[in-house]
Length: 320
Ligand SMILES: NC(=O)c1ccc[n+]([C@@H]2O[C@H](COP(=O)([O-])OP(=O)(O)OC[C@H]3O[C@@H](n4cnc5c(N)ncnc54)[C@H](OP(=O)(O)O)[C@@H]3O)[C@@H](O)[C@H]2O)c1
Image 1 (tube, rainbow, N blue to C red):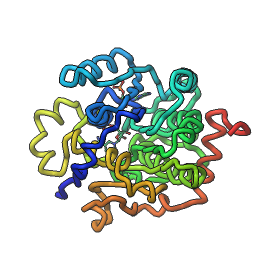
Image 2 (cartoon, rainbow, N blue to C red):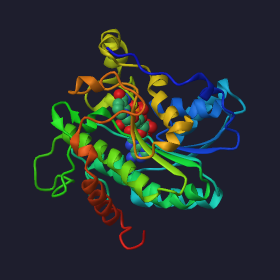
Image 3 (tube, protein in one colour):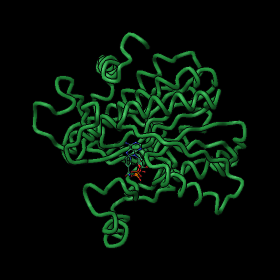
């Protein structure tokens, strides 16, 4: 079992009072811990949540210990393109700056479900919703440079429960082949890595650093479609910790490193992981940044093809 890398302590003391950060899925797990830490460092944190009431409850929890926290809770359902558009419209009306976009929200191993636009849910929420959101906020990110985009990917972009991470360009939404929830998760998480790489290339010289991260294997509600959360949190918790599972605060370290460490500005496009769970053992001890063992994660032609396909799917082709 490898120990997670922890953030350099001076990064946790930075005064972020001039910064605005946006975190998707900030009401739970890694996103919540990230929001709490950035608020502690005096940043204005926009918590973009699927259910506003859950976001408000999370914000209240942060404020209980940190009454001066500057938090905005806004509704964002990444599975509905009109929600993403409405969110971005309102955000850019209300704010002229954005110093960090943390594309954190995600679902894993869901039963076959389609979004209103007909997308397979994991590809739709984990990748396409974030792709559209990022495009709609790119001008604001550029205007706020130096700024950063962090995509929460996963070690499972390489292989998830034995399923290889591949973008199935012929049928990404499983319309003509048998659905597999783990394969679809791996596809969506590989898309997160390729999206960050391609974004880094497109925004080179603009002062916007774009990276992807694997947070580690973290005790959150992400597991809920595979195992009851109470079994993870109570029955199996000691055994899972021994096997390498870490706590949400430890899981927030990769995101915070990618957002705050000065050297990351020279590492745009890279993949960061404090610890891995790879077939390639040399990667398991982690490092910042870390080379993915999946050859598909280094396929620049696939990254460009994914970009074009994503633009078409979210209705941006010809406009971007
Ligand atoms: N936990 C791990 O071991 C692990 C490992 C590798 C990568 N990751 C990645 O880390 C990220 C954060 O996950 P987590 O572990 O912190 O899980 P989590 O506690 O389940 O948090 C996921 C967040 O995503 C939100 N979300 C789900 N569907 C959404 C939608 N349609 N629109 C907007 N928000 C939506 C959830 O909102 P609700 O509360 O409303 O459902 C929740 O706030 C994910 O991208 C995940 O793939 C996690």
